Amino acid sequence: MYKAAAGLVAKRGYTNVMGFRDGIPGWAKAGYPLVKEHALPKVNVPSLNAAQLKGMLGNVCIVDVRTEKLYKEMGWIKGSLKIPLGYLSKRYTEIPKGKKVVVVDHAGKQVLVAGRFLKTKGYDDVSRLQGGLMAWLSQGYPLEK
Image (cartoon, rainbow, N blue to C red):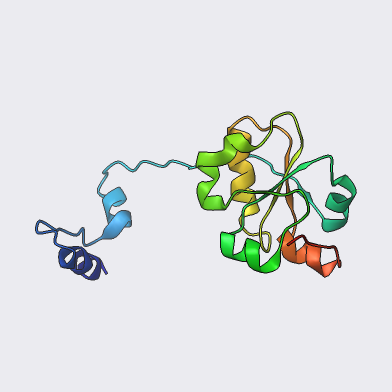
């Protein structure tokens, strides 16, 4: 496997390419140091179901982290602040502090990462929509376009 990876790198123009035959397990077994870092701390981001979120509309800041394409194709929950996940680290300051924040995505897969990120930035009251916008739609709740 290391030969394939080294070959791909060499094709990109790198000339001094080496691979470690035994990979990471061999590196560790040889006693070389490994650095283990977590990008985000393990913090709890509670989930809400669609009915709970519907009951809170107007009293929460909904942050929609879906792509621009999905946002335009499907619509959004009324009052949502659209910040695609890839831009959250640059635009999180647009989210008001001191208000409950609910993170929404397409199917509930990316909201935990976004919620953890916001908690590391000082947003204390952050929740995620369980099942994402698909759960919202499955309940027959409306979207804006």
